[in-house]
Image (cartoon, rainbow over the protein chains, first blue to last red):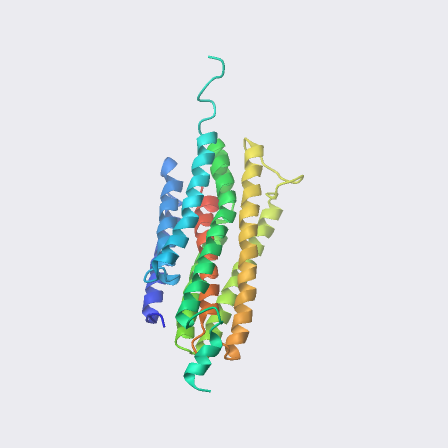
Length: 97
Length: 217
Protein backbone atom coordinates (compact mmCIF):
# COMPACT_ATOMS: atom_id res chain seq x y z
CA UNK A 1 0.00 0.00 0.00
CA UNK A 2 1.43 3.34 -0.99
CA UNK A 3 1.62 6.34 1.30
CA UNK A 4 -1.70 8.13 1.75
CA UNK A 5 -1.27 11.90 1.96
CA UNK A 6 -3.66 14.22 3.83
CA UNK A 7 -6.03 16.34 1.68
CA UNK A 8 -3.97 19.42 2.68
CA UNK A 9 -1.08 17.97 0.62
CA UNK A 10 -3.17 18.25 -2.57
CA UNK A 11 -4.95 21.51 -1.75
CA UNK A 12 -1.61 23.23 -1.02
CA UNK A 13 -0.38 22.11 -4.45
CA UNK A 14 -3.61 23.42 -5.98
CA UNK A 15 -2.97 26.79 -4.28
CA UNK A 16 0.57 27.06 -5.69
CA UNK A 17 -0.67 26.12 -9.16
CA UNK A 18 -3.39 28.82 -9.07
CA UNK A 19 -0.82 31.35 -7.85
CA UNK A 20 1.50 30.50 -10.76
CA UNK A 21 -1.46 30.78 -13.16
CA UNK A 22 -2.22 34.27 -11.79
CA UNK A 23 1.45 35.28 -12.27
CA UNK A 24 1.53 34.01 -15.89
CA UNK A 25 -1.75 35.71 -16.67
CA UNK A 26 -0.66 38.99 -15.06
CA UNK A 27 2.71 39.00 -16.84
CA UNK A 28 0.79 38.62 -20.11
CA UNK A 29 -0.29 42.26 -19.75
CA UNK A 30 3.22 43.61 -19.09
CA UNK A 31 5.51 44.40 -22.01
CA UNK A 32 8.76 42.54 -21.34
CA UNK A 33 9.82 42.53 -24.99
CA UNK A 34 11.34 39.23 -26.07
CA UNK A 35 11.14 37.89 -22.50
CA UNK A 36 7.32 37.59 -22.31
CA UNK A 37 7.06 34.10 -23.75
CA UNK A 38 10.27 32.57 -22.28
CA UNK A 39 9.25 33.72 -18.80
CA UNK A 40 5.72 32.34 -19.25
CA UNK A 41 7.21 29.00 -20.34
CA UNK A 42 9.52 28.89 -17.31
CA UNK A 43 6.40 29.25 -15.14
CA UNK A 44 4.74 26.45 -17.15
CA UNK A 45 7.71 24.21 -16.41
CA UNK A 46 7.30 25.10 -12.71
CA UNK A 47 3.60 24.12 -12.83
CA UNK A 48 4.51 20.87 -14.59
CA UNK A 49 7.03 20.00 -11.87
CA UNK A 50 4.36 20.57 -9.19
CA UNK A 51 1.79 18.42 -11.04
CA UNK A 52 4.25 15.62 -11.80
CA UNK A 53 5.79 15.42 -8.34
CA UNK A 54 2.69 15.75 -6.17
CA UNK A 55 -0.45 14.96 -8.21
CA UNK A 56 1.18 12.20 -10.28
CA UNK A 57 3.09 10.90 -7.25
CA UNK A 58 6.47 10.82 -8.99
CA UNK A 59 7.92 12.04 -5.68
CA UNK A 60 8.28 8.90 -3.60
CA UNK A 61 7.84 6.44 -6.47
CA UNK A 62 10.54 4.07 -7.66
CA UNK A 63 13.43 4.94 -9.97
CA UNK A 64 12.03 2.98 -12.90
CA UNK A 65 9.12 5.44 -13.16
CA UNK A 66 11.53 8.39 -12.97
CA UNK A 67 13.42 6.86 -15.88
CA UNK A 68 10.25 6.32 -17.96
CA UNK A 69 9.10 9.91 -17.33
CA UNK A 70 12.55 11.29 -18.17
CA UNK A 71 12.85 9.20 -21.37
CA UNK A 72 9.93 11.03 -23.01
CA UNK A 73 11.63 14.37 -22.36
CA UNK A 74 14.99 13.15 -23.69
CA UNK A 75 13.47 12.12 -27.03
CA UNK A 76 11.50 15.38 -27.17
CA UNK A 77 14.77 17.27 -26.62
CA UNK A 78 16.49 15.38 -29.47
CA UNK A 79 13.56 16.03 -31.80
CA UNK A 80 13.72 19.78 -31.09
CA UNK A 81 17.52 19.90 -31.21
CA UNK A 82 17.88 18.17 -34.58
CA UNK A 83 15.07 20.23 -36.15
CA UNK A 84 16.56 23.48 -34.81
CA UNK A 85 19.95 22.46 -36.21
CA UNK A 86 18.26 22.59 -39.61
CA UNK A 87 15.90 25.60 -39.45
CA UNK A 88 18.03 27.94 -37.33
CA UNK A 89 21.13 27.52 -39.51
CA UNK A 90 19.53 28.04 -42.93
CA UNK A 91 21.22 30.87 -44.77
CA UNK A 92 24.41 30.72 -42.67
CA UNK A 93 26.40 29.42 -45.60
CA UNK A 94 26.10 30.69 -49.17
CA UNK A 95 26.70 27.83 -51.63
CA UNK A 96 29.55 28.18 -54.12
CA UNK A 97 31.90 30.47 -52.17
CA UNK B 1 -13.69 -15.61 1.40
CA UNK B 2 -10.64 -14.80 3.49
CA UNK B 3 -8.79 -11.52 2.99
CA UNK B 4 -5.76 -13.26 1.45
CA UNK B 5 -7.98 -15.15 -1.00
CA UNK B 6 -9.77 -11.92 -1.91
CA UNK B 7 -6.41 -10.24 -2.56
CA UNK B 8 -5.21 -13.21 -4.62
CA UNK B 9 -8.35 -12.82 -6.74
CA UNK B 10 -7.26 -9.28 -7.73
CA UNK B 11 -3.77 -10.33 -8.82
CA UNK B 12 -3.29 -11.58 -12.38
CA UNK B 13 -1.34 -14.84 -12.55
CA UNK B 14 1.83 -13.33 -14.03
CA UNK B 15 2.36 -11.19 -10.89
CA UNK B 16 3.61 -12.25 -7.46
CA UNK B 17 1.45 -9.83 -5.52
CA UNK B 18 -0.67 -6.66 -5.70
CA UNK B 19 2.22 -4.15 -5.20
CA UNK B 20 4.13 -5.71 -8.13
CA UNK B 21 1.00 -5.53 -10.28
CA UNK B 22 0.58 -1.85 -9.30
CA UNK B 23 4.17 -1.02 -10.27
CA UNK B 24 3.74 -2.73 -13.66
CA UNK B 25 0.50 -0.83 -14.34
CA UNK B 26 2.09 2.51 -13.46
CA UNK B 27 5.18 1.82 -15.57
CA UNK B 28 2.96 0.97 -18.55
CA UNK B 29 1.05 4.24 -18.15
CA UNK B 30 4.23 6.35 -17.84
CA UNK B 31 5.60 4.78 -21.03
CA UNK B 32 2.31 5.54 -22.80
CA UNK B 33 2.56 9.14 -21.56
CA UNK B 34 6.11 9.37 -22.95
CA UNK B 35 4.69 8.49 -26.39
CA UNK B 36 1.99 11.14 -25.84
CA UNK B 37 4.72 13.72 -25.12
CA UNK B 38 6.11 13.00 -28.60
CA UNK B 39 2.62 12.96 -30.16
CA UNK B 40 1.93 16.51 -28.93
CA UNK B 41 5.65 17.30 -29.33
CA UNK B 42 5.31 17.31 -33.13
CA UNK B 43 2.75 20.12 -32.91
CA UNK B 44 4.81 22.04 -30.33
CA UNK B 45 7.79 21.73 -32.66
CA UNK B 46 5.81 23.02 -35.66
CA UNK B 47 4.64 25.95 -33.52
CA UNK B 48 8.22 26.75 -32.46
CA UNK B 49 9.58 26.70 -36.03
CA UNK B 50 6.80 28.95 -37.42
CA UNK B 51 7.05 31.30 -34.47
CA UNK B 52 10.80 31.56 -35.14
CA UNK B 53 10.03 32.42 -38.79
CA UNK B 54 7.31 35.00 -37.99
CA UNK B 55 7.56 36.09 -34.32
CA UNK B 56 5.75 39.41 -34.68
CA UNK B 57 2.79 37.99 -36.59
CA UNK B 58 2.48 35.15 -34.05
CA UNK B 59 2.39 37.71 -31.24
CA UNK B 60 -0.23 39.75 -33.13
CA UNK B 61 -2.33 36.66 -33.91
CA UNK B 62 -2.15 35.52 -30.30
CA UNK B 63 -3.75 38.85 -29.26
CA UNK B 64 -6.87 37.76 -31.19
CA UNK B 65 -7.43 34.70 -28.98
CA UNK B 66 -9.82 34.92 -26.01
CA UNK B 67 -7.37 35.15 -23.09
CA UNK B 68 -10.16 35.41 -20.50
CA UNK B 69 -11.74 32.12 -21.59
CA UNK B 70 -8.33 30.44 -22.01
CA UNK B 71 -7.20 31.55 -18.56
CA UNK B 72 -10.48 30.47 -16.96
CA UNK B 73 -10.09 27.10 -18.64
CA UNK B 74 -6.58 26.73 -17.16
CA UNK B 75 -8.05 27.26 -13.69
CA UNK B 76 -10.85 24.75 -14.44
CA UNK B 77 -8.33 22.07 -15.44
CA UNK B 78 -5.98 22.73 -12.49
CA UNK B 79 -8.96 22.46 -10.14
CA UNK B 80 -10.13 19.24 -11.83
CA UNK B 81 -6.63 17.80 -11.37
CA UNK B 82 -6.87 18.55 -7.66
CA UNK B 83 -10.18 16.65 -7.44
CA UNK B 84 -8.59 13.79 -9.39
CA UNK B 85 -5.67 13.60 -6.95
CA UNK B 86 -8.18 13.54 -4.07
CA UNK B 87 -10.10 10.78 -5.89
CA UNK B 88 -6.97 8.61 -5.92
CA UNK B 89 -6.61 9.27 -2.18
CA UNK B 90 -10.27 8.27 -1.59
CA UNK B 91 -9.65 5.08 -3.59
CA UNK B 92 -6.52 4.30 -1.52
CA UNK B 93 -8.63 4.59 1.64
CA UNK B 94 -11.51 2.56 0.17
CA UNK B 95 -13.98 5.46 0.56
CA UNK B 96 -16.15 4.56 -2.40
CA UNK B 97 -18.79 7.27 -1.90
CA UNK B 98 -16.12 10.02 -1.83
CA UNK B 99 -14.45 8.38 -4.79
CA UNK B 100 -17.65 8.36 -6.85
CA UNK B 101 -18.37 12.04 -6.20
CA UNK B 102 -14.78 13.14 -6.83
CA UNK B 103 -14.70 11.28 -10.16
CA UNK B 104 -18.03 12.85 -11.14
CA UNK B 105 -16.67 16.26 -10.13
CA UNK B 106 -13.57 15.73 -12.27
CA UNK B 107 -15.73 14.71 -15.25
CA UNK B 108 -18.04 17.70 -14.71
CA UNK B 109 -15.12 20.15 -14.72
CA UNK B 110 -13.87 18.44 -17.90
CA UNK B 111 -17.29 19.04 -19.48
CA UNK B 112 -17.14 22.66 -18.26
CA UNK B 113 -13.78 23.01 -20.01
CA UNK B 114 -15.27 21.78 -23.30
CA UNK B 115 -18.28 24.10 -22.99
CA UNK B 116 -15.98 27.13 -22.46
CA UNK B 117 -13.87 25.94 -25.42
CA UNK B 118 -17.04 25.72 -27.50
CA UNK B 119 -17.90 29.37 -26.76
CA UNK B 120 -14.35 30.27 -27.70
CA UNK B 121 -14.50 28.41 -31.03
CA UNK B 122 -17.80 30.16 -31.77
CA UNK B 123 -16.17 33.54 -31.08
CA UNK B 124 -13.27 32.59 -33.40
CA UNK B 125 -15.81 31.62 -36.06
CA UNK B 126 -17.67 34.94 -35.93
CA UNK B 127 -14.33 36.81 -36.09
CA UNK B 128 -13.27 34.87 -39.23
CA UNK B 129 -10.24 33.35 -37.52
CA UNK B 130 -10.85 29.82 -38.79
CA UNK B 131 -8.24 29.05 -41.50
CA UNK B 132 -9.58 28.47 -44.99
CA UNK B 133 -11.64 30.40 -47.55
CA UNK B 134 -13.24 32.71 -44.95
CA UNK B 135 -10.10 33.54 -42.99
CA UNK B 136 -9.89 37.31 -42.62
CA UNK B 137 -6.70 39.13 -41.60
CA UNK B 138 -6.30 42.89 -42.02
CA UNK B 139 -2.84 43.17 -40.46
CA UNK B 140 0.43 42.31 -42.33
CA UNK B 141 1.53 38.75 -43.15
CA UNK B 142 -1.82 36.99 -43.44
CA UNK B 143 -0.18 33.66 -44.36
CA UNK B 144 1.74 33.48 -41.05
CA UNK B 145 -1.37 34.53 -39.09
CA UNK B 146 -3.34 31.76 -40.81
CA UNK B 147 -0.57 29.30 -39.89
CA UNK B 148 -0.87 30.41 -36.25
CA UNK B 149 -4.57 29.62 -36.34
CA UNK B 150 -4.01 26.28 -38.07
CA UNK B 151 -1.75 25.39 -35.15
CA UNK B 152 -4.17 26.90 -32.62
CA UNK B 153 -7.01 24.69 -33.86
CA UNK B 154 -4.86 21.58 -34.30
CA UNK B 155 -3.33 21.86 -30.81
CA UNK B 156 -6.50 22.83 -28.90
CA UNK B 157 -8.48 20.31 -31.01
CA UNK B 158 -6.17 17.41 -30.24
CA UNK B 159 -6.19 18.47 -26.60
CA UNK B 160 -10.00 18.64 -26.57
CA UNK B 161 -10.15 15.08 -27.95
CA UNK B 162 -7.94 13.99 -25.05
CA UNK B 163 -10.20 15.79 -22.55
CA UNK B 164 -13.24 14.06 -24.10
CA UNK B 165 -11.60 10.63 -23.72
CA UNK B 166 -10.74 11.55 -20.11
CA UNK B 167 -14.36 12.51 -19.35
CA UNK B 168 -15.64 9.17 -20.69
CA UNK B 169 -13.04 7.29 -18.61
CA UNK B 170 -13.99 9.26 -15.46
CA UNK B 171 -17.71 8.53 -15.97
CA UNK B 172 -17.08 4.81 -16.44
CA UNK B 173 -14.86 4.71 -13.33
CA UNK B 174 -17.47 6.67 -11.32
CA UNK B 175 -20.07 4.08 -12.28
CA UNK B 176 -17.72 1.27 -11.27
CA UNK B 177 -16.86 3.05 -8.01
CA UNK B 178 -20.57 3.37 -7.18
CA UNK B 179 -20.81 -0.41 -7.67
CA UNK B 180 -17.87 -0.77 -5.24
CA UNK B 181 -15.59 -2.36 -7.84
CA UNK B 182 -12.48 -0.87 -6.24
CA UNK B 183 -12.99 -2.22 -2.74
CA UNK B 184 -10.29 -4.52 -1.45
CA UNK B 185 -7.24 -2.52 -2.49
CA UNK B 186 -7.35 -2.69 -6.27
CA UNK B 187 -7.46 1.07 -6.85
CA UNK B 188 -4.93 1.02 -9.72
CA UNK B 189 -7.45 1.90 -12.49
CA UNK B 190 -8.10 5.17 -10.62
CA UNK B 191 -4.39 5.97 -10.25
CA UNK B 192 -3.74 5.18 -13.94
CA UNK B 193 -6.70 7.29 -15.14
CA UNK B 194 -5.41 10.05 -12.84
CA UNK B 195 -1.97 9.98 -14.50
CA UNK B 196 -3.66 10.44 -17.87
CA UNK B 197 -5.86 13.30 -16.62
CA UNK B 198 -2.90 15.15 -15.06
CA UNK B 199 -0.93 14.72 -18.28
CA UNK B 200 -3.74 16.33 -20.29
CA UNK B 201 -3.70 19.17 -17.74
CA UNK B 202 0.07 19.63 -18.28
CA UNK B 203 -0.42 19.93 -22.07
CA UNK B 204 -2.87 22.77 -21.45
CA UNK B 205 -0.43 24.44 -19.05
CA UNK B 206 1.89 24.86 -22.08
CA UNK B 207 -0.84 25.66 -24.62
CA UNK B 208 -2.10 28.58 -22.53
CA UNK B 209 1.06 30.78 -22.73
CA UNK B 210 1.99 29.65 -26.26
CA UNK B 211 -1.38 30.39 -27.83
CA UNK B 212 -2.86 33.13 -25.65
CA UNK B 213 0.18 35.01 -24.34
CA UNK B 214 2.68 34.71 -27.23
CA UNK B 215 2.84 38.51 -27.26
CA UNK B 216 1.98 40.80 -24.37
CA UNK B 217 -1.56 42.16 -24.47
